[in-house]
Length: 321
Length: 290
Image (cartoon, rainbow over all chains, first blue to last red; front, top):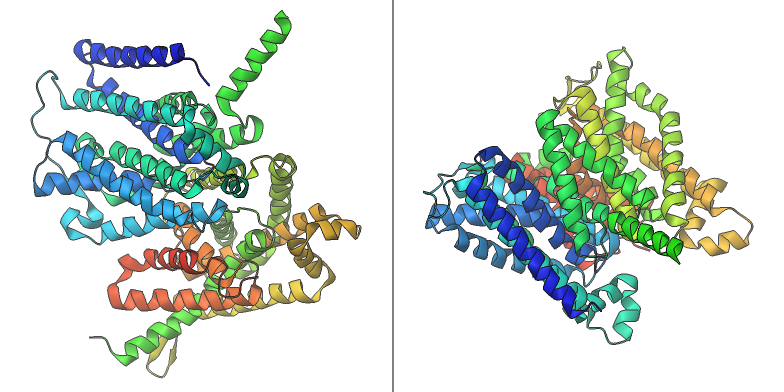
């Protein structure tokens, strides 16, 4: 169990991050930095959300892109039908994503391991195909979105989106952290280690899995909702792209799945590398970077960066004593 | 208008394609169904096989001959991949689930991007005499390349299931799937058998990859659709059932072809995944499950 002081320092840290974001919004002029930072922060949300189910409970979700795409398209629908503001879009996306997550959670009743993973890929492709065949939201060719005028304290829409994304990331990390240190996390870890044994000792496995799936799904869809405004253009092939799935899975594994900081570290590191590679070399190569790093870490450092740091710290302590 | 003729054409077409689906899935049926390796990179190996065939075809080789010539190389590749997988995951035992899956998922993207970097994102085709011509049967026209693929697929699928049920090594592979500990007690080395089996599964994938590029143009990200198709066939068949694989391939081929005729091509990718999802929900052990 972590001490109460740890709790305070977490919130101070969160406030500091928000403060830095606000300061950057107020002072930095170059739009591009916000454009790039948005992607990184978006991946913090996705990686953290993935880790709630994948890291704590051990259910590997290959369908992050399904939730992400659903979030983006819920936003598109709301913009087209009613012109709702961004906040409502995100909330609506989270609600639908949560419902979808609940459905996926019901699948875990019967499916484990690779079967669960394949089922999530299946959901992705089925949803993508449905959207491709749905004229109202633009079909396969996609749909153009007009950004509404930006709201007051911000002077550009991209800056506002970044700020919103940072807020979302803090919410996501706070939820993940709460789950990790509460009874929920203990239950999920029991499921990961041995589901039958957990069930036998009275852990309400189904309830826990449903909660984890719902929260994870809601966060992923919420992360997808601002995509419509960010790109001013949404098409199924990019909104449901499997690259989101592989990144959302690679980042927690590279960072370390056992601690909430793992996905954050992984997302910031890998996201930044990806942005640099995309700009300097090519966008194909950034997927290669993800793939190679994923394989490397899985093989050589299964506990991720957090695990490496812990081992390093342990060695230091040993030397001191 | 939908007519009986159209339905008949769809079914015949579906049966031809279905046999081809069985051939592209049979490697997975061994690797995943028998050996329990979460081989999500199987379709990526398939596309890799297609591109190797394409390269040989550029030098004037017939695609099917190229596919057969590639088999020993893929056999070695498969054995190496399994050895690596065993040493890093199975041997350590801890949390092989998440890490093993993530490993193969990473391999998928490495192969995909590798192919994009070498060949670009354009579609590639092979050339042969039987590609582009068609056979006329009554009032039906059947593309000859589908018939060639059908024939090779049938030989491949039946050949592999005979190998597994009739030969000594084949039976050993089935034994390792049933009870590894018992096999160990008999003095056999399960790891070597599994390595060989995975090699065979990958070698078969090389020829199946050749069929893939004979049936139609191939692009690097094509493996994503085939994740659905191959896993659908394997799950539908019931893990490790070879005869089931053939039946399941035919079921998928016919249902895809009928959906294609009724609703149009844009719905086709969802068929395999839909079927897979329904099967997983209702009867995860498959039609002919163990």
